[in-house]
Length: 360
Image (cartoon, rainbow, N blue to C red; front, side, top):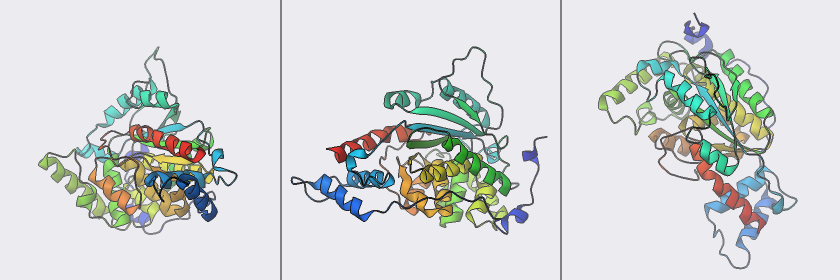
C-alpha cells in the first residue's frame, strides 16, 4: 500500500512548525531613482502624469526586478518558460472536484503532445513548456510511438496527497521536499521569465482552505465557485471542507497549513517562486491555485511579492478574494475557468508592450 494512504497524527505535525530549510536571499526591488527615471520616460514632454495608468506600474515593476539602472533599454525578457505542475488531491475522492483524478493523466498527456489549450499560445509567444509530475495519483504512461512536444519532469512526492477530510494532506517533511523540488526545477531552467500554473483534481479545494485559514476569509466565501451551480454540490463541498478545516484547526503557521490542507503542486510552485525571485526572474502567476502558492511564498519570504506579476483574475470567487488579500492587481479579467497557464500567455503581450514603452 502506498505510504500516502496511511493516516498521520494531525496534531503531532500542527502544534509547532519545525525549522525549515534555509531560503535563498530575495532582495526587495524598491528603487526610488529608477521610479523617477521611469516616470520621466513615460511622461516625456507630451503626456500627462501617469497617462499610461497601470501600464506604468507594470513597466516599473519589470524594470525594478532587473534593477535596470544602466538604462531602461537594458530591460530583457529572455527565453520565457511556462512550468505546469501536475498533482492530485486526496480530497477529490469526496466528489467535490470538477475533474477526476483520472483526467489529470489525460490532460497531462495532451500538454506533453502539444494538444493542450495553452500549447498554441506558447508556440506563438516563444515560450518553452515543461510539465512537472509533482504528485499525480497514478503513473503518466506515454503510449508507444507518441511524439512528445514538451518534456515531463518526474518530481513526484507521492501518488496524490491524503484526503484532508481524514488526515493531513502531507507531512511537514513532504511539504519541505516539495518546496525544495520546485526550487530545483527553476535552477535548471534558462531565461528570466517564469510563468507558473497547474493541472490536477482538487486544487481549488486546497486553495480555498489556504485562503480561509491564512487570510481569515470565511470558508463559504473562499470556496464559492462559478462551477458549483448545483446547490447539492455546493452543500457537499462546504460539508467536506468544513470537516477538513475542523480536523486541522490547530494549523496556523504557513508550512503547517500547507501540509495539513495544501497540495504537492502548490508547494512546488511556492518553491519555484522563491527560487525565481532569488534569481531576479519575472514570475507570471496564473489562477486561483497558483495564487495560493504565492500566498505561501510571500508568507515565508515577503520580498518574493515584488517579483510576482498576477496575469489575470479567474472566474472563481475565491481568486478575487485571494488577490484582494495579496493586494495584487491582475493584468486581465477574462473570466477564465481553465488553468494550464492560458491566463499567463494571454497576459504576456502586456509585458512586451511595457518593455517597448520603456525603450521608446
